[in-house]
Each structure stands twice: as structure tokens, then as C-alpha cells.
Length: 166
Image (cartoon, rainbow, N blue to C red; front, side, top):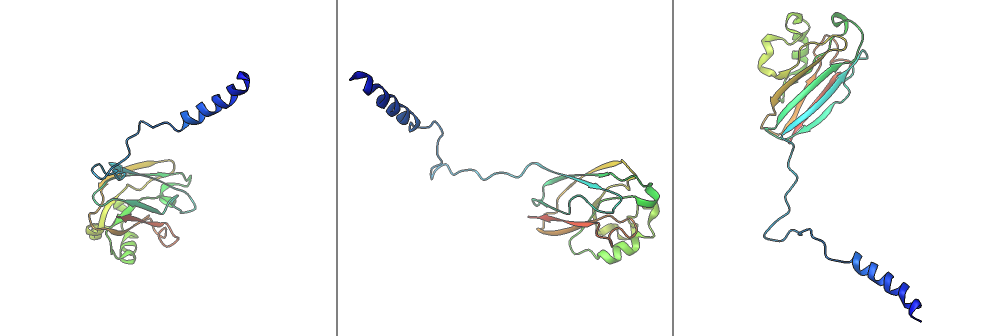
């Protein structure tokens, strides 16, 4: 008769062991659960290619957050024919005026000096298999901030995106 009691006792012990108290302290009214903090630096990695497309076109960052953007040109065409850059503009910037002026700004990597006040940050113009990295502080005003490749005609073919500041 004792051997018939062993199995139910072992099963009961396992169930009770699984229901034991955990060592984790649950948040209480006096110790609220901490909200997940934004990373100290927002790392944005973008690639561009010979088909005039950015690999990603939308990013979210926190107002005032440090941001690091790395742009890599995966294309194979020469820089003079298919260079790429990343230009982040202020919210509300006139994109048509900027890209129209950029056509004449080859000497400054197609970032027109006359509209420098509209630029938050930009990479250099990249040839095939080149990368550039820029760091800046995200604007403190929430909203959508456009970015684009300012090489002639690239914006018109859709080489653009937005950084959303929350």
C-alpha cells in the first residue's frame, strides 16, 4: 500500500514547489515600476545603392537625444554619376527650394551653402563602398524632420525619409 502513495506524494510535492514564492519584488505604490529609458545614443544605420533608395526611410528618436547616423553606399557606380549623402533638414524646410539649390552645389557635396541654416546635419558625398558617420543632438521640438540625398535628381526618385522626434 505504501508504494501506491509514493507517486501522488511526489506529484503533489512538484506542484507545491512550482507554486512557491518568487524572489522578485513586485512594484508597490511606494516603488513604481520604472519606464524603459531611451538609449543614450540613437544609432541609425542606413545604406544606399545604385537604384537610388535608402534602406530605411523612417526613424524615431527622443527630443534632445544624441543621434549617430552611419550611411554606407553599397553601389558600384562612380561617385560623379551616383554619389549619395544624408542631409537632415529642419522641420518645415522648403524641400523643393533646397533640392533646386543643391543641383548647383557640387563643390559642397550638393549641400547648398546659401541654405545652410535649414540643415541640422549631413554626411559627405559618398562614392561606391564608402561610409560616413555623423553625430548630432536631436531637436528638442517634437515633430517630423525630413532627410534626403541631395545628389541631383535623387530626392525626386524617392531618396528621402523622415526622423520623428518624440
